[in-house]
Length: 566
Image (cartoon, rainbow, N blue to C red; front, side):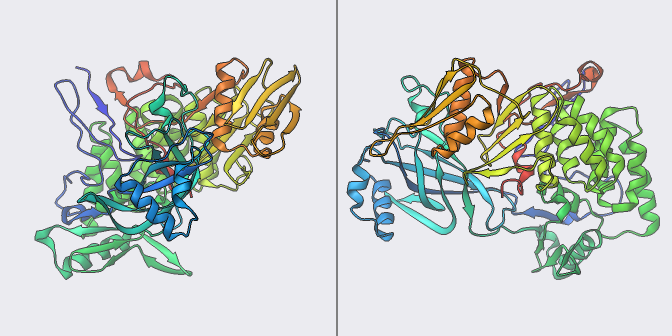
């Protein structure tokens, strides 16, 4: 029988198990179900469930400008009435004239405030034209500042809640969308990192109805504070505060800032009360479960929740022959900041696609030079997702690290040119943080080259060694720059002439399609959750640096980088 463990994710570290006649039944690893304890010791999760782990959708009607005749005058509708009211509130002169322009378009704007988002954090917003709109394309457009709220349509009118976020920025439309065939794609886009949260979302625990009391609320807070604390103005303080007889407020521990889902799971695995003898007996029982691949994941989590007392058992786990046991043990040790976790996690990132995203996440949580060295080595492997995943992990570990330090090019997007070994590669994002990373400093275009960078900039080769970047705009003098064929110089010239991040991604994608970009070009090549680890064929699948694809998850790795997109 081929037993297998199926990873299910919505975000980064929310896992699940499924079962059928040939699939191993593994308990849910979501924050809502940390799994049963085999000991008689009661855990926090026996009394409380998490609060604040759901996403909040915010919406608005917005206005995109800068379109070159592809916009339209919106038809009468509640959306148009709402936008006119917003424009009048902001004292926009002649709002009806503005809406009637073919260079503007009414759009529906939507974003999601993730669990634990803090005031000032950035997030993506989606824009799309309404049904029956005459707008033909949003390419090259710019979303004006839009106020995002929880909304609902009642009695043909848009009703709104509190103002929760603002959004604005250049709209990125799929660069591969064809003007004649892909009308739907051209009417949709994203503003990467264009949303800014105006309020922080709180996290906490809610006591189950049959356990709600002041005594239990205090017991839970005290148990959590015994395991986790932070420092506030140099003073040591616990992360949990009993607010009422049913609610305990949680502060995120810095170690888990990029993996809130795991933090909640570990908190719920903390013992409410146990004697020294009970602790020894429970750890002994957990050791047996840790060495069994079928129960290793949750045993490692409970050992992590014990803190330093679980370290010795976890160190035994990373010496086990089974790759699952080694991985789960190393993952827990990483969040306890033990350097011994670095090598097995690096090996898992290289060789096991099902573990890769989780291994990189754990490495980024460590404050250890051994973890940094593992990630540095991964920057040069053949696998695109491993290389870029290692880059993001290094950035999350220390944004000021000279190895991955970049710049805010044109005040629009993050730009990184890495001096790394390995095949030349360019990576761009279509999620969260607008960013371009060049793996290799000497990458070049080859002639012939003739591509567009948005609606106003053209890039053409004028000799085998030179490229002309020109801007043409009605009512403005033409501008032209001649640079070498180096990708870095061309990107900088496009920005200098007013090109936006979506314009550059379009130019790179067109150049790659035309054969003018020899380098590997990837968009959102990130490790994925939702992959299957088949125990029966693990040895056969244990190939280094595989880019094996599993079940796609939109926010698979970005959730880990909550701070990354700030």
